[in-house]
Image 1: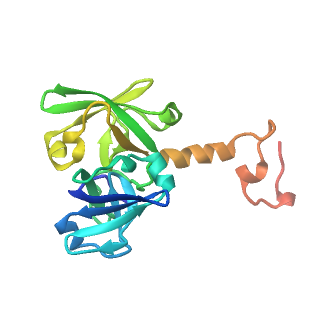
Image 2: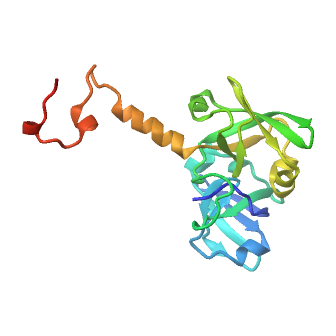
Image 3: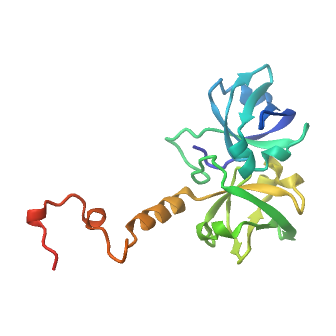
Length: 220
């Protein structure tokens, strides 16, 4: 579990396709000191498991399923990625809850300057529109951000200078893909209501009432 507050940026030292998957070597001297083999690290918002650690680098593998839903397959040597270690609960949560299980990719369609911020417009697959609300949270390349404006086929986010400086957004350009993770709470709510919907025109009493003994239950 993560919070979407990027800790640092790492540099891709190697990106090798193998057996349909991707092997990444990421250089970041500081984060290496605080992780171990088996640790979870969000790389551009994707939860990956540390498999090897060297002096200033760590290595992770990306399975085909993850490649199909993220932009990791487009990473090149020397490119920067956002990094966040797994959250430790018991203190402030400055972002919002992220699982690191990216839903899909979106595309940056415009970047505008507004006051002291930059406004990014991001298009997304319409199947995921139900998970977005104005002023709600969204994970973009592992960054916890707030939806500023919601449009039929896109949404906007305002990026403050601090976030630009500490993340890869500052080098993103129009037309590039970003990883999107939508609010896990919205997904659970959707699943709950789907399970409670009428079946064949009638509600299933067991789903609504729980285990109530037949002799004590009367339907008026």
